[in-house]
Image (tube, rainbow, N blue to C red; front, side, top):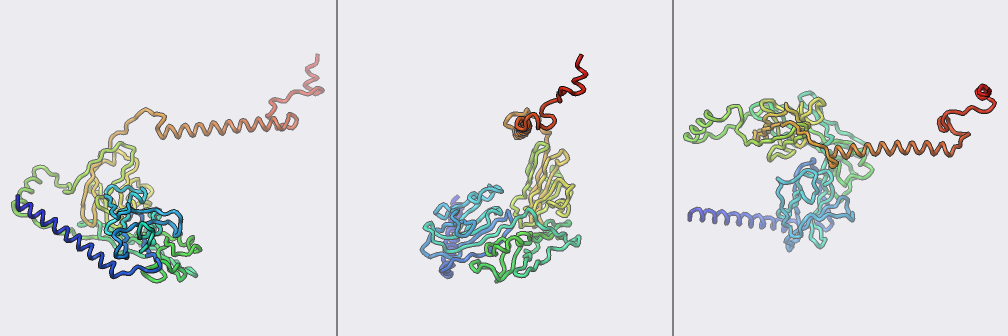
Length: 432
């Protein structure tokens, strides 16, 4: 018992030492870097749904906590404060929901701002400063959408977008490195993410870039007259096949190996991978989105249904119109309008290793009585009411027109069937 207490105390001391070292190292960084007298903005570009970190690279030594601000447009009266004024905001990334406000998707750690699952609306200016309004460092963040990405399958001979050179600027794609092979031991796939960039000598000099005269397409450094043609350029991704061997696992001790062999022979199914399993029960007709645990959009992620490989060349969103099941660019597996045939076990790979399984059971859709609060009922009432209002309005307009035109000049149909006039043949025929 005493040994355990001593070990725990030593571990706590080690954590304190490491934390103090991190703070001291950060303090040395602030001593080395002097804040600029004129606030500049570093350009940074990401895909939507990515998580990014913005370090506050400089601040006065006497400042113990920072406040982060967000402005969509520089100098705008609308400013969002991303802090609790103590610099201690920390959130659990596992509870972050897509599409939620940036106020629910940020964290502050060691003066750095972390934004989880960034959205296109998060593009703008991020400023590090104090609650009194003194700014030390700034970023120009460009979150590029993934809804309309150009896809090139290298195995099919497809090529990425060519550079677009104009008179005053040129557009090109800056690619990240190829990811790891998303599967091992079998044929897998690799991805290469590409972000849109623009090169021009007329960029706003207040925005600082890694390469002179080059910035991301959504940067505020791009002049307004260039933005329309620049926005037509899409981010892209290249995909190719790959084959990677599985790493050899360390052999367990002899006794442990013998026990595991006995357990495998007695109860486990040999064709099922030994990965953590989740169980899902969904009614037919509903939609299901599966996310691979611990995976991010920039990771190499693959999906299988049993022994069937769901390759991106067939299941990537927008590739096949006949496929109902698809994989989006954030590595999520979508199964809309569940059918009985969708039942089974789905497996996900992350960075070349199978990490999780999902056993899906599809239940019959339960018929329930409609109520006035159901969305379908509300929509039906709206359609019927709108149709009745339009028909009533047309009826009223027709009768008003007939009234104002008068009986003599009224168009046919307003006064009913024509009456015989005196002296006509019909009138004479009716006389005795």
